[in-house]
Amino acid sequence: MEIKNIFNLISQKMMAEFNISAEFNHSGVKGDYREDALKKFLENGKLPKQYKLGNGEIISSYSQTSKQTDLIVYDNNKSIIFQASESIQIYPIETIYGVIEIKSKLSKQKLNEGLENIKSLKEMHSPSIISKKLGTSSTISYGNTPPFGVIFAYDLDGNSLNSLEANLREWCSKHPASVWPNMICILNKGLILFKEGFKDRLHSNEISDKCTTISLNFQEDSLFEFTSRLISLCSARKVEVFDINQYSDTGMIVDGLRVKGVRGWRSIKNPNKQLCLKKEFIRKIYSECKQKISNKELLIKRFGMNPIFDQLDQNSNGLVYLFNPENYDGIADALSTPTQSCESLIETLQNGKNIANGFFLYINEVPYYVPHIYLTDEDLE
Image (cartoon, rainbow, N blue to C red; front, side, top):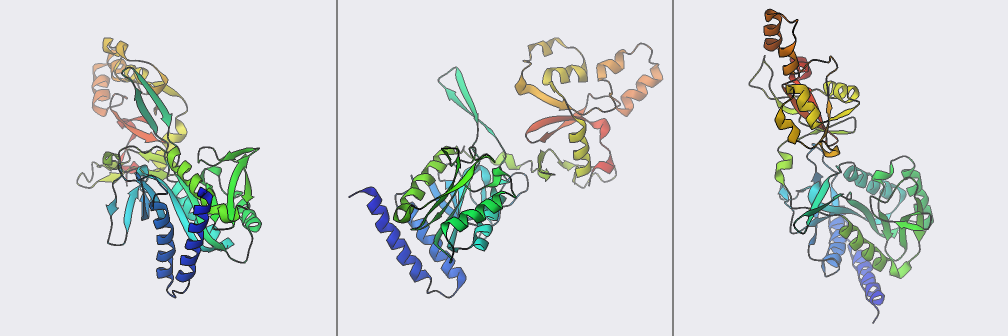
């Protein structure tokens, strides 16, 4: 027996189960039934054992939370799942492969609902570099593929695959390609995918504004085509063992920028209360900093020449932005100014009008060094 025939028989069984679920009057019960049908199908040997399925919400270390998601594909060996309540589970985005939005009948309204849920997930992705050792002396590094988002529907809702494709194109024209879905499947009807020229574009890091949509009428082979592409989407994203320390420094989103190092501040006026950097202060730092310098250059600017700095490697991995609009000197320059009087030198050191002491902000995973002299109580909230 051909494998496609097996999938066709299973597809027929799923449709029968879906028709039974339609007899339930309560929408919540019906939703659970249709989600369970797809979940049981995928978990019954269709996906490798490392891929597990759950539902709930997804969080990031930048204080973001996705919308409630029907099915979440996560790594069974490397994930930590937080139980918010008996009915709500929370998954860190670093531990998931992607999400599946499940619809009974896919109208334009239901399509847009699923697309918005996928958008809320993909907006949470923060690029990260994964490093793997090759033998004892070599290391390979690569950027992680963003999580996927797909929509699975049991049927259309008085519309057609072509009209649904037109609805998708309309939605995509209003949103960046980074939040587009990876595929849409309608059981026993077909799939809607993306192409660039003659090349298929399935994975999240391949889909761009150069892509166009394409609807494929696979009919009874739709479930087989959906499952094979779902396995490909899972294998394309690499998930590392979850490091809960990433959430010890909870960041925030400022004008679409991912910012860390913003919390845990204390003011001179109220030292017992923990405060946060104001967004206006973060915007000022981001807009003022235009050119990167190496970590070695930063240390020399802060402390002056030191033989130990010669041992530091000056490469692109060590670049940092320095926020210093007033061009204050480092501590060594302040101490070595020949024309400076003893009184002015003491005042300089007491007032801290130098860049020796400061802190790091991370904006879109890039370090920004900010001398403490620029931070006042008015910059905290």
